[in-house]
Length: 147
Image (cartoon, rainbow, N blue to C red; front, top):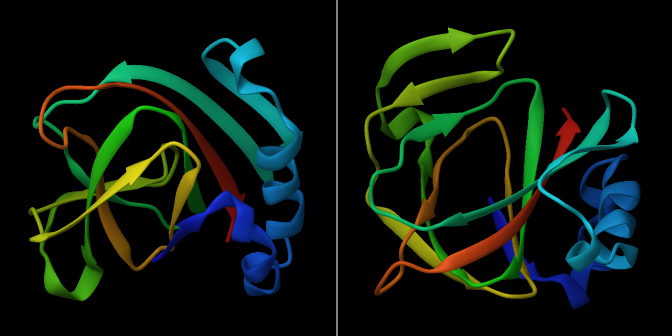
């Protein structure tokens, strides 16, 4: 897991060969003009999902095998749960077509606000969409990068 502000994005380009295109998309796109939905960046290798929602405390703990998540907060604030896959138990078997499995909850949390991102790798079980102190309207972009 990595978390930082988008202004420091260049530090993370060397981490994965496809991160340059992913971070470029996050940097140059005006998300206020985009509706919620899926946007192709580089075919199935890199795509973005734009979501607007109200945070809650009713969120699942998930992990992916095919894609790395770069979750970028456009507006609002959100609490993310995270743990290593070896420190939790799978409760719903991995679905290859949907690229996720569900896990028992972890105990680590971090709050992110506008302009910040968090990267989840396949070994990172995570729980997005959680409220910080109270429910918050969030607009978020999840860039999926084939691992």
